Length: 366
Image 1 (tube, rainbow, N blue to C red):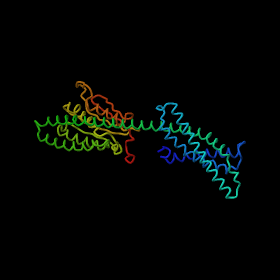
Image 2: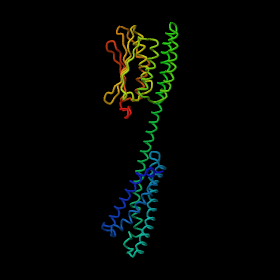
Image 3: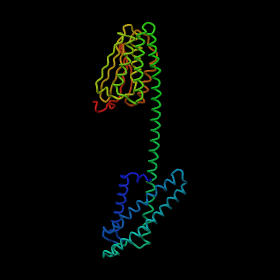
């Protein structure tokens, strides 16, 4: 179907353009020297319906253009095809114009008017006018149809490219999420292994907590985004598991307002950061310390900080590990322009700072 016929607004604009063209022709017939003059109303009664009729005839140029695509049709064949279609359309219009004029003559005679007032011109002259006006108008319609076709093809190509990007993005997200589970399980099993030898009861409690934690992890991981509040609840479960191992050595401090907790983030985004905080911050120090998680609003962004104690005398770590790299890559997929992750060391504290767009917060939560 023609794109104009698929949209009511487009069709109304298209018909309005042809009505204006018919009115313009009516003005010419009623006042232009050299043409038989007549009142504007009578002239418009002839030209406006004929203009609308030819407007619908010109829609056929769409299928002619599809049959003769630019770039794939030889120039001679293209020119011959378009001129032939334009001539046939104009001749059809001339025949319809003759019928319409005869209808108006009969109506004028029946109503007691002068039939001659309605005569536009002799039949030969009328046909010549239809050809002289109709062929350029049809070719102009064909040019517009070629532009519409190019625009539609461009939109389809853009849509296909966007769909490909979405598929690639989803595949990358699935791959990144898949990396989290073995990474987390490796760390958790190491923690359980450390307890089995000297505290079997604590290891059993840790296994039970790990089972609950993994069930919730699977539930959240099935979503594209989760609320920060749900993510923090999961983090609290994980830290409760680790507290079985570390006892009083592991402290936890979480600060986030209800509005910020409603922020939508990728699932399991904070998990590897908190794992790193426990592994490199708490486990590496005899006195332990506190893992701090703070989320706040900063203008049009939400800033999440994960801080852990750091032994300044400890040997420097090589690389930043799978967890931080995974978070950085997931943020690039989530929102490459406004989401970021940076790290900083200040004295005996190591902090990872996540920045996310604040418009991910539902309005009702603010």
